[in-house]
Amino acid sequence: MSDSFQNIPGTFDILPQTQSSASDNVASSHAWQYVEGVIRRVMHRHGVQEIRTPILEPTALIARGIGQLTDIVSKEMFAFERGNTHYVLRPEVTAPVMRAYLQHHLAQLGGVQRLYYIGPCFRAERPQKGRYRQFHQFGTEYIGADDARADAETILLAVDIYRELGLSDFTVRLNSLGAASSRPAYKAALQDFLRPHVAQLSETSRERLESNPLRILDSKIDAERKLLEQAPVMRDFLDEDSKVHYDEVKTHLRAAGLPFEEDPFLVRGLDYYTRTAFEIESPVLGAQSALAGGGRYDLLASEIGSKQDVPAVGFAAGMERLFLALDVAGIALPDAENPDVFVVTLGERAAAFAFPHIRTWRQAGLRVVYDLKGRSMKAQMREANRQQARRVVILGDAELDAGTAQLKHMDTGEQQSVSLDSLPAKLTE
Ligand code: HAM
Image (cartoon, rainbow, N blue to C red; front, top):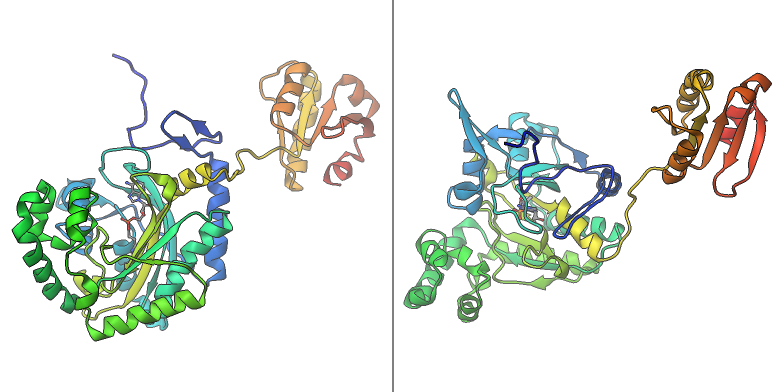
């Protein structure tokens, strides 16, 4: 038996180096930091503040929040029990954020809480390109907001992040699912339409026909899509308030100049949505085309124990899918951080001499690296080149005796002898 270990399929190590394989590229930690930096900057400009909630949540919160009948809850939860407590590795962050909002009485702060997060989520799905067991989401939740501007701003926020990263090839699909009160009539109409065609439905859709017929609407099976072309649409069943709200969302998006497509079959895979639902799709992602998804979830709070309804809207987006799309679009991301200074030392005396100086230069803000393996000067110079250091400081016995160092500028190749006293000033120049 081999005693070496591998990461679990559907999870990734994020290394300082980009990893390229036939099926998936994993971006470097430098690229992750850069993209996260852009996300944080755009959030900051929108007055959205970060919230960090635990990875572990009570299973009942997720089951009640997302819905027992959803794939996520019925098939994809990493859930376990210890003592009498039931834990789940969070499959998403909306229900946890709402839990935190209610638990910490954030409503008392008044106004709308604009919150964002970046972090891992877990779903026991069959791993494939763009679909993983541990993946990362960034997203926002605007809690306490009924205004249609909040819905539009949520969508625009996601779009602004993509555009700021240089991504422009995506489509925004929009729908309104209406209030919970308008759902039963539509559900019944859809069931009445589908029942005579039950023989044509897939096994999954047949199961959903009685329990969760709306989910049949986002079927990917051609024959079912064809059949659905004749199906009744939610739009004709919307209550008056939802209609007005939906029109307002569209008006705000148009005013902001954002193109979108209305899709009456967009339903989303989580049960908490009411009124606005949207997805942002990239044509380069293949079967897992959703870069981001979200919508309004006005009833989630009461579903998880609040005495009052709390209107809210948000989105979440997959980090890994974003990296896939950036890669296909040929958008280069940083994949290394080059040293300002690489210190090459010859012999133990020079190495010992350099050590405290390196610390001082680092305290002055320079990124300074050096060899820790006692390698030859040639090997150290090769390493400085590989790391694309801006400057190299060379120290040997002769330099120490003369109170000097060799300073090499790697871009020009120019090398000069400088006094040790003037070195700090030269390095920070
Ligand atoms: P979701 O559509 O389930 O929505 O997930 C949002 C995004 O997370 C997807 O569009 C996709 O980019 C990414 N994603 C989901 N599952 C995986 C996976 N297995 N592997 C890789 N990426 C994945 C939600 O999670 C809602 N909480 C969104 C929301 C926020 N609604 C309101 N506020």
